[in-house]
Image 1 (cartoon, helix red, strand yellow):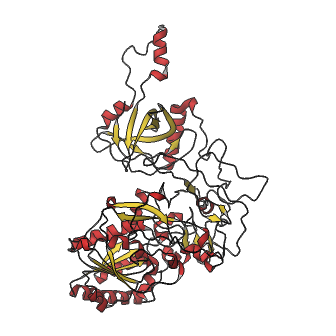
Image 2 (cartoon, rainbow, N blue to C red):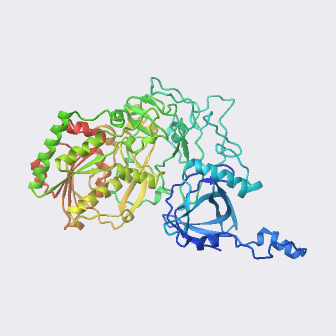
Image 3 (cartoon, helix red, strand yellow):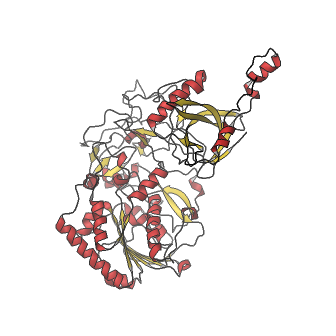
Length: 612
């Protein structure tokens, strides 16, 4: 018997002690009283529990193969359906918890991955099931379920047991450092591996395990300035993950920090087959030029530190190592810890300057918007080394206040990004080896900005995420590995969005190109667009009734261009912070926008040169 329930499932337990987490958001279940009655075994009628001496009746009631399997169907956010068998329920401190297990109808048997739901009442008094997300509550409920529901069939073990052959204890680090003891190699695991990481020294190493920190007690309590590059002789084993059916759940690995906090391992490359990409080159950005030559003797490849050997908290050449493979820009620490707020005199000057610009914009029939792209560690602050604390009031907050005083619409993206991480924690928004956000974050930023613009310009075209095909390709964006001399020793992937309608903008004209750094490896499309361009304009002939936009920007706009160019008629992008009234008027703009990274706010108010 099946009941079909539209909700998002989160696998948070396994009968043999493995713990997996797949983030989904649970909604109230309609008519839950009826559903629960279908899920739970029917109550026995009077006399059904009496003993019988009839052998046929004894065989009928004890033969499990003859019992109907009670199941229900869970529909995930992608429309994938999974059948779950009801194992039973247990009560803990007066709260009822249900154990459900994925069931394969073809094999007529269930797996041993089970889901834990907590029974609650909604505002109408109906009983609904909610996923247990609190780790301590989960462990407590699971222990009772293992004992009462699983019984002798399930071996109750500590959650640090990965499988019968591989155990990770809080005092041991089996996923980070390469084995240097040839007589005691790291144990092999029998479960599937996470997507392979970059190659170091000719060996394939899962940097997600190498840099994540795991349960290591060897990470420094304070940041350590790395002075030498240790030699890696043996690749470290990848940390194990669990394989889950595609479109139902996404394999997720839990990362443990030094203090014992659990983090979710985020994945850059979520595609199963990169050969199926049919994106047009206009939206196929930012990608690495497939014809780019690799020179291991070039400065960006002269290894200054071996990333396979560093731990969270280490700093080298401006690069701060965090958990789960995240590299951070050291110069953002002042922003992070709230030490970079503007002095009163500079604050007042900035208000006056911006107010003057805004008055000019409005006097010419235009509207001014100011987009602040959060620093990587603002969004992924939990992945920062634990010696640093995100301040409650920072330059970002101060600048939002400054813009408000100047009468300019501030596009504060911190809540947008936090919600995106919460909704899909395994889908990272920033490149792991780079300071920049990827096109997932670019889309979220685009929608937040466009929703505000739409209030003033109803003719603007806004595209929903469902209108795009999303594929993954290798990216050149690895600036933090450039600084450490590991640029071509690592590979990272990023999402590319392509409008399914194909009604994309055309590059009308372009100006000088950036010749330095990693941008020299960015792809140039058939029209001549490349992420290295500093001045260009797109025209979308499908949007003749839409307004025009002029964008003063830094490198964070690279992830916005694929979306912005298809929402306006003319969109002009100038890699500058200078305010050229003549240039803005020549662009025939209706919307004037500034896009600046949080870490560049100090340079913006000081009128310093644009940085990337």
